[in-house]
Image 1 (cartoon, rainbow, N blue to C red):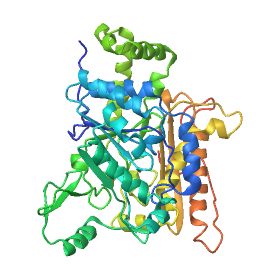
Image 2 (cartoon, rainbow, N blue to C red):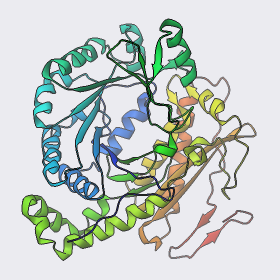
Image 3 (cartoon, rainbow, N blue to C red):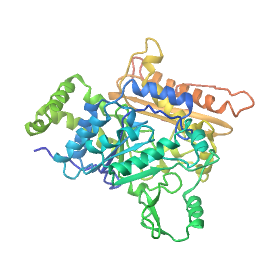
Image 4 (tube, one colour):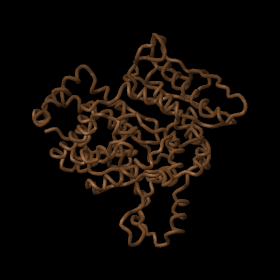
Length: 454
């Protein structure tokens, strides 16, 4: 019988919580999530290569073998997938085989939830998080682009009526939609109105800092990933809508899982497994074990890339030097927040646009052949009055140069910054000096720009 190891990183953290994004598509345009144009373009890119229901189930089964206890379905908006109910039902069937796997959760904006609530509960959904950013309809309209207050409230009420035992509602707290509140600021405001607020968990590395007003049934939780991170207790991994494993929300590092499943040598094995799930694992076929070996290799390698804290990762730095030396980041948090605009977070959106553009290089540039990629990062920082963008791209096996993918990533990221800053900029915005710093592989060999650090 094959033995699977736990998902443990270099810092001894055991990962037992998997978040699976079912789609990049959403029916809202939340200002804190994705601005209009980048949001729409991002949807099209993700949906062109979206993870299938069979791939979701196969990967969920694999990760359950490796100790996953909880799976959360996210998006985009998961209720926009027509096969959502079947996906939940198939995941629920895995509980019979993996006794430690005991929770299927979902995060939704609530717009379509009321209609499907009962069926989702019957399919096996255990808990639901519903977004409700304000009790004022006009503020929700400004935040999300639609009048969704009634839908969200109806979703919460319906979840209670049909019998969901665990119901949460999510709130993104921001200040004039420009600068985020810190956890302590929010806590002080609540304690001024409810002085009998008590803390339910004292550990600094708990993902959610839980509080409760004495005598009340409900609880208040703060997820302080930006202002007081909980990295020491992080147990989460993510699978993106296009089938990549993402080790940290604040890190650009991703590795493709579906490329293994879509390999011609493997795809028929996946199909056979899916057609005969109850019995197939008992056969322990050599082909299936080879797929597990391939997944083990890239997942274990990805876990070694996970930092002790996301304050040490590129996405939380204002400046990222090519030689990856540490820099002065004493005011990185406040400066990063000041780059929030009415259209969204400039750095985050530009990174997303650059990463997605690199994946689509062969579709954007005629005669540029498609290359399977194992790594894409886009680093953005502010230095000497200019925004600097740098991308690193690696191919599977690294046998060919992927400078076109890196240059495309930087170009699209720069255009995204331009698009987001133009409403605020009175003078001209200039995009300049896009250049190749280093290349490994390819028909013409390697290249290193004079003066650039390896």
